[in-house]
Image (cartoon, rainbow, N blue to C red; front, top):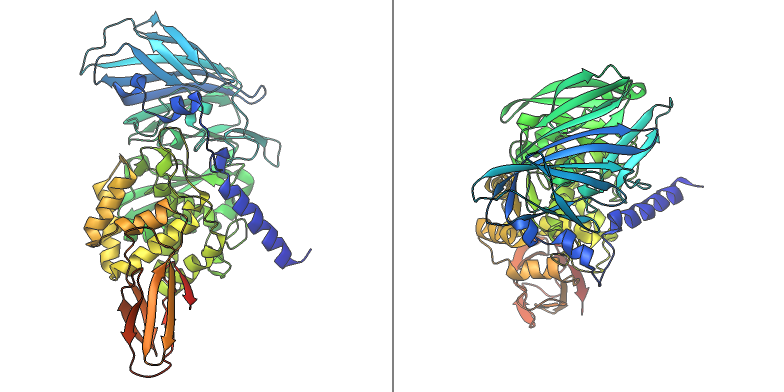
Length: 549
């Protein structure tokens, strides 16, 4: 099989995978009672605010089981006596206690409604302890289908990891499984067989020898964290580290890799500090200095787990050695290191309240690849890369999904979304202003959950542009604006077609090599030209279709 055909097949597989992440990116028109329980802020969720988790579990590779408990601390916001805890079958929530009292649990599929005995007074901080056990769903095509990957490394050692974006963290541990409420801090205690080590989020506080052929690793997360960002990674790891001199001082950067890959990783992971330098320039300080930054090797492609970014790109540049843009620029960096680390700013720092707004995570993060290239190779290289990825856009459905039912929008949130942002950069027309817009975005919404409307409003205010029609066009419709034009003698006729109501966007063109802005509308407009049959070229940095009529 020739190299070109292999690359084409890899790209086709990649697009299919990106379009069906964990089974949630495909179109879905009918939603169930369980979808609503999972995706909405139910009355049993809204009355209490998460403050702290302590997840304390034992992982048994031989039986592929997990058993343990999660202490869930919360502040009472308003009166209620019923609390919703989420845990997905086939795991079993065996018991919930408060103040050493066993509580009644009403099981409704993956949602579990716990009736509290003690009065819940507004302003009080209380906790419940949720005990569980069983065989969690096994991930077969992680990270696309979600669950626990139970694998072996090349030396026969257990190699285990969690991944659960979209599907939900409740696929492997009990929690309040909705994006709107991030826990303020967390401890993660994981017991595994000796010879293995668990790496989770935050900083390692201790390793305890249990004298029974197991060890327990204790990790502490000091910052707010979304549920799907919590992870376990279990393997026969080697560790190396460095200190990065960042915008907020010294940042510990730790790397956990299979022992056989140690020397290879020391060379290949040089992309990590390069990433940090570029992204702190564009987005502002890394949002989790207190928790360090880690890259952790796993038996699947990778995921953006907060302060514990997982890596499985086989120590190759590009996406498993392929360039998603087809331009060659995608082979200048390791896609997983750059993309998944970009999520530290967009997904982990700024997090969508409802998964319907997941474009906030993926569009900005895909765009971060472009900005990484811009930082090291220049603006034109970055433009070629992002424009090259337009061929992957399907325009099958809008980027925003349906709210309150755990429904993501189109997989176009990656390639179309990044090209939308690249277009917005052209409209801002001031690269330093654009950089400050992105940096302020991360400081304004620091450690917050947000809605699409908040992001739209901020970008409009910061840019000084009317962007209502712009976002309606690119986020809420599948139409790509068409600029129709025709040169007749000393006249240029032009107009927009295939646009939504209220779409307004100026565009830059060249007439005989001279750059100028025009403001098309849905009605035909005429521009006088200095000479007959002038050559008109539309700036390719705008994500539109150009058609001569």
